[in-house]
Length: 136
Image 1 (cartoon, rainbow, N blue to C red):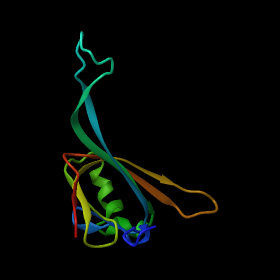
Image 2: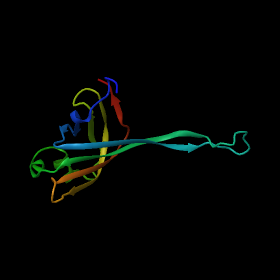
Image 3: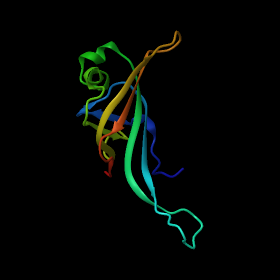
Image 4: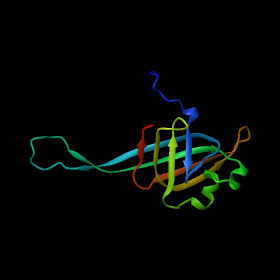
């Protein structure tokens, strides 16, 4: 592993300008459509494509805490934000500096509990526009 490798334990997620409390993990997936350009009668027997529109989506898992509903963080926002459009997302993989940023629509929120663990919440989101990476 090189010295430029990042560790996940310093990451911070900000939603609408407020840091999300109790983050356990997050995942972001960036995808792009492909549009077929293959034509009949060509010498090439393989299909050909060009890049289409891109999108991103993801999830974040947090420890659920009733106090979160009185502060401005992801749990508190989710009460009125499921389905709301253009919620600002910034993910700092090392706490500050370089980040991914874009707008999201929060598409789901679930709470999970087990008898031998803490109550956790999972939030899913869909990108609303382009995800941008800003180097520090």
